Image (cartoon, rainbow, N blue to C red; front, top):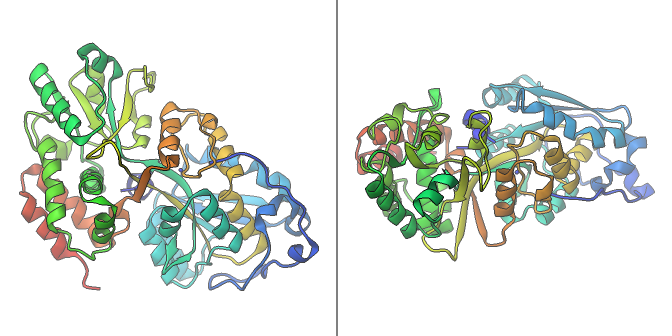
Amino acid sequence: MALNSKRRAAAVLTGIVAVSLSAAACGGGSSDSGSGGTAAEDTTDYSKWCDMKSELQGKTVSIYTSIVTPEDAPHKASYKEFEDCTGVTIKYEGDKDFEKNLPQRAQSGNLPDVAFVPQPGLLQTMVDTGKAIPASKTVSDEVDKYFGADWRKYGSVDDELYAAPLGANVKSYVWYSPKKFTEKGYKVPTTWAELMDLTAKIATDDPAAKPWCAGFGSGTATGWPGTDWLEDVLLRTAGKDTYDQWVAHKIPFNDPKVVEALGKVAAILKDPKYVNGGFGDVSSIATTTFQDGGQPILQSKCYMHRQASFYASNWPDGTKVAEDGDVWAFYLPAVDSSSKPVLGGGEFVATFRDAPEVKAFAAFLASPDWANAKAKATTGGGWVSANKELDPANLVSPIDQQSAKILQDPAAVFRFDGSDMMPSAVGAGTFWSEMTNWVKGQDDKTTLDNIEKSWPAS
């Protein structure tokens, strides 16, 4: 699941777009009033926001998001260039109950101008209210140029783009101790077979530790790390087309290919020889929090922990997160080294007021200018974008830099967190609870059958 949707997770570019705006374009903006519905045809080039000060000066754009203190500070700082160039004031509102309250605000008529939506499923809900504005031509062109077809799909409903990507995170990571690997002579695996061979070797070499540690605990969202495991493995074993069909329920949740994938997850997480380093037996995974899950790596009680890029913020102060540091992360290998499936998540910029200042701000957020400004403003690390022109050198954290390179890799096949795209009764319901039951001892078939039975009829 995407961190911002369940536990706030943790998505590229240089140059300032500042070309003269023609008189016709300057007068071509949409109405400054009105909220929701389909925007009229608008040919204004909003990528030239820096030349629109005479039109935008004194206006206000409101943002509503699940990104709260302390992560909100870099966001606010990253808008300075836009505010200075346009004279627009950005009003920021963060809310931990964003996912629950945004649809309610649509019902009450109290929508923001812009919302950072962390789930394609929630975007669909907001479009269904009739209040979301389709993306401008400028934003559409920017998404095609800077993000590509996969990301465009996640911000679209019925093939119409509503929201450009904002931040992103890479989930296909395995955290480990470079020092321990060097000490033992272990090499980072590049295929799934090598990963399993390494797992077996560690279990033999070091009976006092375990190859893996894991934690599914997350309060009312307990179980989501298990969904990520299954999604990551299914993407590798069955491929992107089957993954897409499964997420859309065009094949059943308990399809044989999903059964196979869960079996491969079980070969790690349900083997007592391999887990749960530092915590106990297999069942301890259910009660170990995801924040604590990887910590035994620092005490040499386990060697590997599969978790997303945002896990970097969970290491204790003073921990060096680097290739030569206390902990680092390698790419979760595919079946073979020739393919590079990447599971991840992110947020999308939905708009709810048809006005030039809102469209200009949305264009700014989809641009290389903002992605690089946000990278520079995030001095503590923990943020990345899928924008292809983000300069990794502007990212502070080495893991963020590595994530940006993975997202920009032409060989990467990115797929959004599946549970975030499923109906909430499944993705944020039975998928969580049944994976928790599974790691407590429930068999594979019962687990997948129960989730399949819970899928809404319509």
